[in-house]
Length: 442
Image (cartoon, rainbow, N blue to C red; front, top):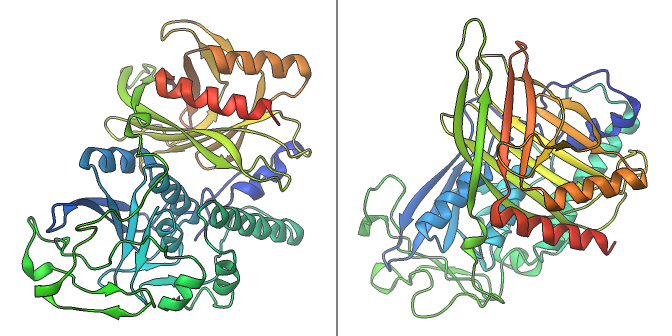
């Protein structure tokens, strides 16, 4: 992963944030990015082929929209890796949607892609189809040796936390660390079984599915190999091929997937008029969800709120995470992490500053600002740290729980002002209720 440029001079209270967020703003190449192809197996099961590199620009809302609209039952990957945090976010959403994951050697799933694969409720892979190695990062931040070591430790801790969430043996991390980032180790069937990369309830791997470049299922694209219980790959051939999940359920989740939880709520992006440009109002949507994320200080993961924002026209996408803060080096009760993704060459030159975060009762209400301090962490990445005095904590939590809308006023590098407005809606209300109740118990 390659680093993105960031602020070299920032206040001491936010210095540690740069270390934590180096990974979040890592990018691959300008042309890289994920694609979600909607396909159907010969047995009639809809699935997604996720291809391309994981990057910081990936928007999980797009994946949710495609997966739910297609009613996908499983995901297959064709990816060389990329940004590990995007991969883990996709893995968590795959788990939230109760999707299975399958991997064959017809496609590639290496490096960070392996983390996304682990999100499957039931996971099946032929030997040699999942590649792992050491994770790495680079940054334009001026980190000293101690900060760099701490940063590496943090990303390792985040991956271990993710493995635990997914029910995977933590030994997978130790196994991967044996292989340099310039090398790749593809796992055998017995290794995947012992490290719990694959599951006992795994679907059959073979799968009579349409090849990515085919518009309709074609017998020539049928994949017939499958994985036996002892980890061996067999290929009974086309006449005896076993399709995915055919004739039996491949998993028994504790409850069926609740796609209604991923409801699109209203989002609007306003731009002010200038001497050379008219003002505009662009509609979009926001998807609210609850994820597991550590509040810091080495504590185990707990509920955090994520808003994935997509604005029509492609001018801007955003991801906002609201989480509790347990790191005593930051004087904040909670932190809002806001990542803006804008296309290259966008008018205004990208987002330079967020001014405040305002909570409102209605779309047209003036609202009240949360009591906190904004800070720019990297290109397009901002933190809003909520003040931690008792009275301010009480006031902020009251606003977060009771108000129905968010306003985030921003300033472009050109000086032009804009406003991102987000509706909570029923899914947002539910997300905040669940997270706030969990935080109250801490």
